[in-house]
Image (tube, rainbow, N blue to C red; front, side, top):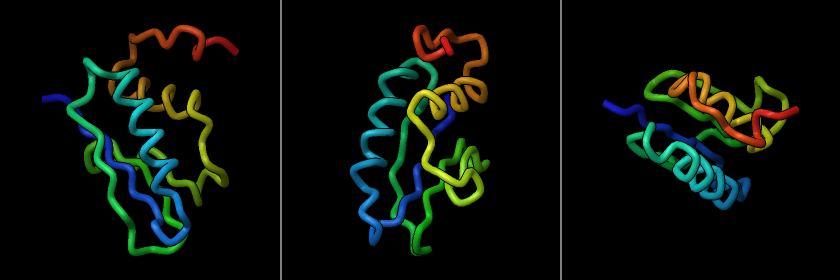
Length: 92
């Protein structure tokens, strides 16, 4: 069974579009590796948490900033498809 990513975002902060864009990027990059990406509005103000299954992959408050898309793709790749090349996103 392929893993599912959940992006939990604060709707009051206006982060729906950022979440949808990140979901699109992940679905495009990991079309064969993911079972889907779900967007979930949070009831906690300022929340932006990304899960792989039930496991927290990234919490904006812990990280201290929003991840760059390259950083997010690398984190997802390391979790769901460690051998996958990300092409230019793997270059420093």
